[in-house]
Figure 1 (tube, rainbow, N blue to C red):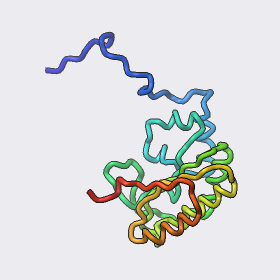
Figure 2: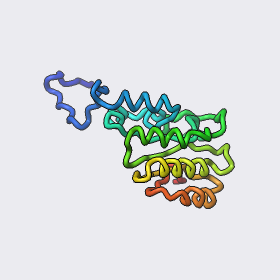
Figure 3: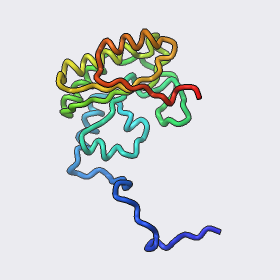
Figure 4: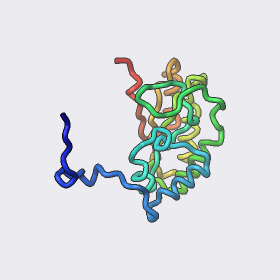
Length: 177
């Protein structure tokens, strides 16, 4: 039989564990308006991150390129999966760079959905995004968190790394166990 403690006797949750709603004085609403206005996606929204108010409130976000539909359906992930209806948006890199400049970011983090429907798996789009960011924000560092580029790994990495991101990360959740 389970009995719960009276509320007064329960241990309090530490401050760092508490999720707060965005306040009117945070940058959350400005970031949200900018991202939606530029027709961009963030992993923050797509994966339903519980820390979105904290990050956006500080004026930061992790941009998600190549659309909002992932061609894989990983059980641990909240990102919408299916068959993307559209090719990558050729203007997305420029809009993302504009948004990052508006946010005055010194470090820009970019991730993506998997796009197994594209021959290069989105590597050229990553490279275009990195180049657009470096042109618009020459003093900012660019960090990428990439998918596995299944089947075209070497070519995709050469394309992406030629754009020279400062930080390269790979989603290791996708490796076989």
